[in-house]
Image (cartoon, rainbow over all chains, first blue to last red; front, side):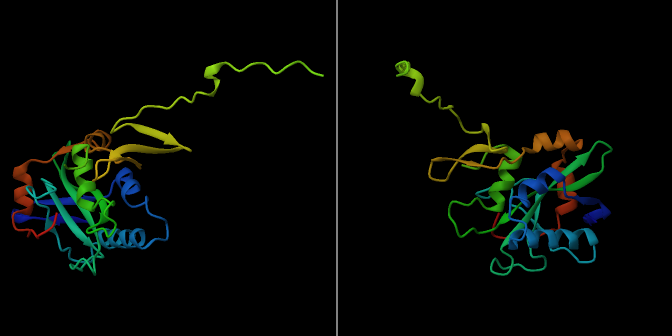
Length: 132
Length: 82
């Protein structure tokens, strides 16, 4: 599966093993978030559904430069219907090709104030520490 | 009557407590955890998040340029969160 941008430029979507283990498999095997992430990944990789990409903010409270996101379950927008999110970072391979690399999965608005949201997790993966 | 119990040295009961700082990794029962700060300034342990630099090294990638991001995402919307 790839995502095409303006000018016909495209980038494949990549789910790396390490990031998937750390982000999705931290949840119990039969938990709703893990099941929803697995289902969303299958749909993305099948390439049968248009993806409602949204750019991450490069200058928000949790700045995520070079990132895009998808809400999970796919096709939903409101946090009540799509409580989770995938974050992807644009990376470049040695051959010059581009890819959207999966870097974070989690709750968009955790009800537990101690839980880090998906954007904070993405920030930590990029910067090595949580924001603030 | 057996021999009197040997006297324990005074420091025999002392427990060695490792000193940890933010970002350090520890292993508990075979699982790795990282020391991270909480929002309220305390410290806690959570499963580590491998930094992107390390994933780039594993995958043979590097960050894409801002120009490439703009070319691919210039027409993609933003919203009010994250």
